[in-house]
Length: 445
Image (cartoon, rainbow, N blue to C red):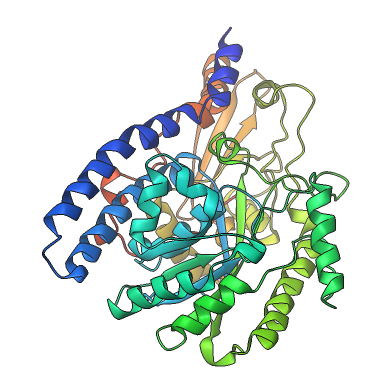
């Protein structure tokens, strides 16, 4: 019965975030509407500043659930400046979580309130959110021949004239890549062939209109363009074939243990202004993404699962999905406990102060490139049915023995941890970016 309860709780992890986010939306919209009326006689910059702050608060709550509640490991590669910039954000599109990836990067630049999206026209009918996104600076566009270029230019020029900070998010593919939608992929590849462009396999052919209008309208206002490539672990099966990326509900149920995000900051001087040249440039950027996806297959596979439920495997199996060593990790363990070959890694320590201690230990031991090898918790099975718990923290090994009953209780707690543990979540006060410093999040497996 306990196992059934834990399994059921794991499957409904998304209910709490959905209830909180949707339940707070009406209050948030009322607060925004009240400020909209009060600021009607004030200069637009006052309205925009408070609106950005309100948006920042709500999106911080979104990030709390999608980044901290899920415990997802975020791996950042490439260039991510710490300072705020006016930018165009270009990324591949494969999941309903993609818009939150922009928040994950923006909050590390203290620019969360400045995020604005180019959205497909149908989303404007979304209750509450549809109306607000437009007021916050979002731009609704129609696809193909129905695209209204003049309307988009006018709206962008209005924001530029008001000095509105811009973190403009565009998904040039126009729709999500789903390997199960073969007709969409075939149509995209046929369009590339028709235009004389290389055919892409793992992303869709990017469309140029919205990107060109945005860049042409803001080229004197922009600092750079961010070319972002996102890959979700678990989006490749055991045979190396693409799978559908996790939805928002699946993501909240911890179906995606890691996100790989590569950021390439491109100076605006290096981007062609002519539409034909920019079209070729944009396609070349997506060719790079396409090649990168084919090279990432090995580590985008979901950790192998046994045919029995994972909670039972946690109880009776000595092997876990995170039992992976680097050479320095293993040597550090042997240094802390010489000759002990039975250490079984159970989990890694995640707290911020622990990470700081790990970095200091890395500097002292010359392990700068191996941050994930510096702390951990191990269980060594004993002959009487108990176990010895060993905690490596700050280079010091702390050990104590557990009898059989405590060992079984410990494993029950570890089994239920993904559903019940809140100790690794950040304090609610850190949700507000005013007191939050941009920190690159390291991962320890």
